[in-house]
Image 1 (cartoon, helix red, strand yellow):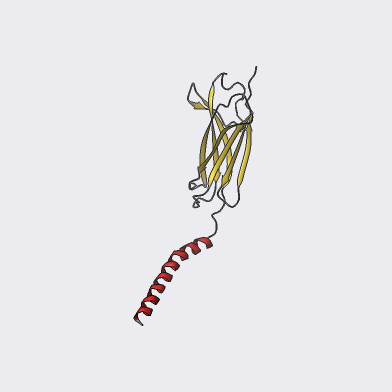
Image 2: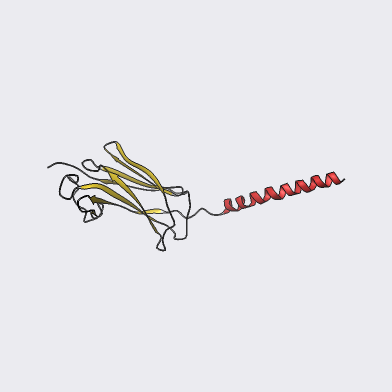
Length: 164
């Protein structure tokens, strides 16, 4: 009789332990997914090696000409791409990332994913990427938010060219 009672006690303890492990998982599974983030803006600025300054946004109305940027006046040696993300300020999902791919003439300049942190009180978060060798060939930039139910994608082209 004592052995049977001890077996039952051990079985009950195991069941309680297993339930203690599964209940938090079940509760997490019932939580709604965090609201999706979106790409609010994709900006690109030339970095001028002679002065250490940046151009205006290359996708904006006051963008400089993209001809002979590597050898002409100002000599831009790199391009900073900034992905502006918007989302609910109090939301965070560790699996959520922004992936950026940049190609020029069939050559991959950059393919990188970076985690997205918690947006500020205005719902904004920014991720920066450096591109090198952006001189004479158009560069296609594609930004995507991954790790959420709805992918958010923005694609733009920087029309770099060389010539007279």
